[in-house]
Image 1 (cartoon, rainbow, N blue to C red):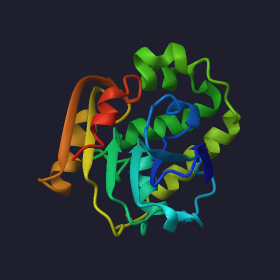
Image 2 (cartoon, rainbow, N blue to C red):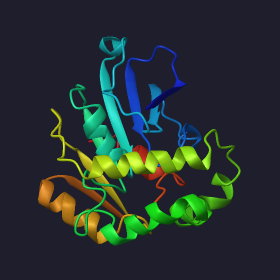
Image 3 (cartoon, helix red, strand yellow):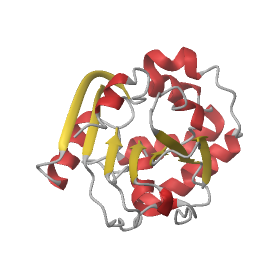
Image 4 (cartoon, rainbow, N blue to C red):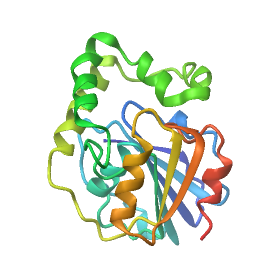
Length: 220
């Protein structure tokens, strides 16, 4: 697992982004989170329990987890004293015919991605934001991304982790071409009928193109 600070200026509040597969911090660097230090978790080839020596210095900690980052947040950060945990276009059951990516679709991607590359996946992921995302310079090779996906596949087959905290909000993009929206909705309704669910019909799998709805999730 990699950790990268986007903002570390001594704010009282901390925002942690748990990103999705093959993603990097530039995918959220444009979001203006006033009053937060901002830390990204990504590249899950070598998962380890999240530690942060200065964690006690923060008044509050919020989490936004996207895509496979939803599962990884539970596995890597089970004991963090979170104020809010927000899931974005993902579930803790990421490879599941009812609650995540259908098993057959995921296995086809896993088998073919090494030869096919990530261009088609990224086009489906980013939607209207693909033109911008395609300009971000990658820091990892395709082989590294394939290794990461294999690691995520292995973890998705393991029994789930039950963290000390509960999910507060789930955003579901109606144009998500990776995690079927109906599977996301089924998971969150089964998880807790009282969870706040925000269904956004025009949002693709990448939810950060228009960051205004993201900022609205930080309010109770």
